[in-house]
Image (cartoon, rainbow, N blue to C red; front, side, top):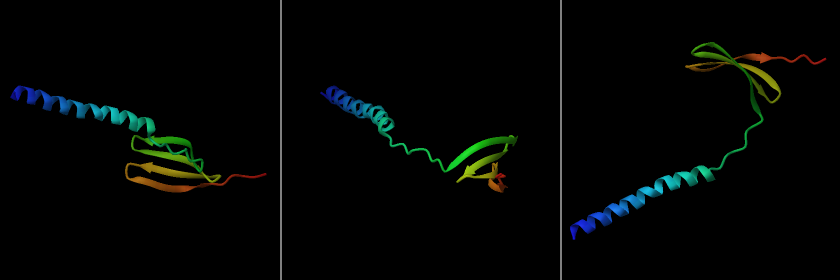
Length: 84
């Protein structure tokens, strides 16, 4: 009698555990994805060394240089475009 209760309990636990992958599948399938923002674009990335990079960003039609290190970001300046 105890063996049947053990099997029943084991079956319930396995049934509950089988819902985890099923839930993850539906979460990935129905996850709401936001549309990409067109306001900020990365135009170029230039590595300086293994911990530092320079990024050329375009923000609202302005080109901005930003330094990226393991400590954070640093504003380096803006590139003025010459209009003829």
